[in-house]
Image (cartoon, rainbow, N blue to C red; front, side, top):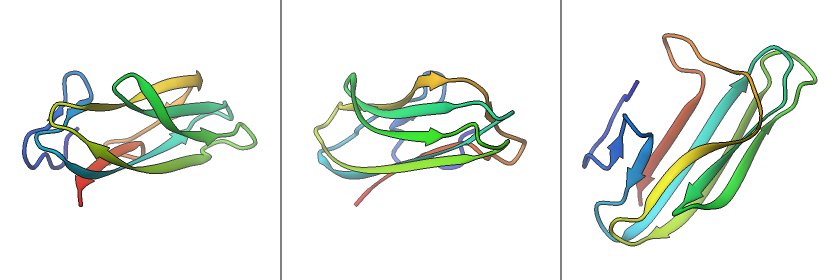
Length: 103
């Protein structure tokens, strides 16, 4: 589900954000692990992992978050990728999210 896509840089089919213009962007990811399983996700810039979130299996529904500020060139691509573990949880109202905006 895409809530807002000002500028149209986010492709909901691929999950990739392509910078429409040069600038400083903030990206945030939040994931709710499910079923007491480890979960690690990365925010990636042009195939290079920049930050990682971790949700440990110590209890069901642990939430991992991380944020990164990136200087992007027009056409740079940013996305979230699965690094390790399994089992993220979401509902009709999203619990697992990927957010980005330009400063």
